[in-house]
Image (cartoon, rainbow over all chains, first blue to last red; front, side, top):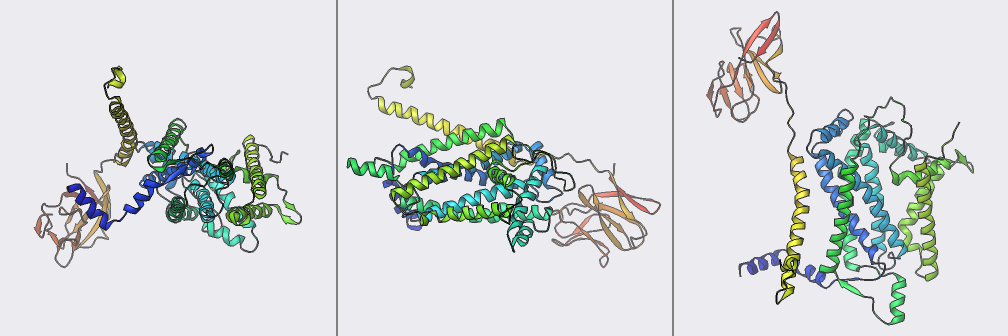
Length: 364
Length: 154
């Protein structure tokens, strides 16, 4: 009696009953590619892990060139479980990039970007860029040698853009070179600006996913049409939700194992007047761009080589964003797109592997 | 428990469901505990051992005029050195015993005053007016040439 009255009181003031009702009737398609549906959920789970561990790190971190490295060192050596929190944040960031890419390519190969999900795709592509921006800005924050030079190289690339390049470099660095001003700037971007944008975009993305439901791949649609049997589905709650929970548990287990057995290292403190250490390279998800830069000559067709790479990346990003509007929904174009995506994926994997082997540098 | 011992009851389903729910519940508790225990420990600030300060240099005596005061660092807390109108040197902890604001010397009143809640202390550190419940801790003052040296009383 009491409970019913509290429910009625709450229901009047927080009217979520229609939402619960919708979730109760929501069903998720079940077919041989269903396993790829979990990558979005895993990415979301890792995003939540990042928000929680990032908030914890903020309690001890000090964003200045004089104190950043020491505060991380203090966190890792003196604060109980500080090493674990930092290690989880770093590993989860890497896993999140990996699962976001897995999500992107699975949606691409299963053609989930088609009408009416174009806006879902665009918001997702923006979120992927945000994830990479999170990775780039967060990398500098411990203020160690590796991150210092990686940030120096990464921001320098923007300088090749004609006319506005110099302005962008200064804008990113908060000055002409990477200094404490850069650290403060990237810190603000990493903990305030990017999270605000990402949270809004995640909400939009999730809302659209809930509204449109999961996309069924064209091949499965075709099979169902031919056999005149509707695509099999399972209820979202509890069936799919429990499977999602299982996927999250697996992600948590992998994350905890990596964080505990391979704790993230801190390295040496950044010294702007020391030479860049040998074997310096960016995070693995920027390696293929890094390797591409090594192969492109200083100038080609009368254009600066770096500018060619930066330009190609920019065009690639624009094409990725606009993809649903560029690809007509016909079997032939879908097949062509799948081949292009496979080629892009193969290129990224090949160049990452080459970079990991350490080849491509000029040897005197 | 019959699911383990194998003595199947007449209605096996509810028993098995209870067992599975129990299993799921203990798993969830385990996961929650292994997440929240480290977080709780992490939130507790680590102890930073501080060297106990016994005595500090409180600047030149020649720059501290009669009927004035100066707040100096005494370890991690402030101390106040006062030169009375008659030229005597006094030193106290500058932490108000009411709510830990830092006190100051009022030349117009010729005693120590706390701005936060209008607390008054006389030149022996006694709380004479306002909310402070206890006197200020008094320190020893010695002059080494022109240097004022403030030290804790043994």
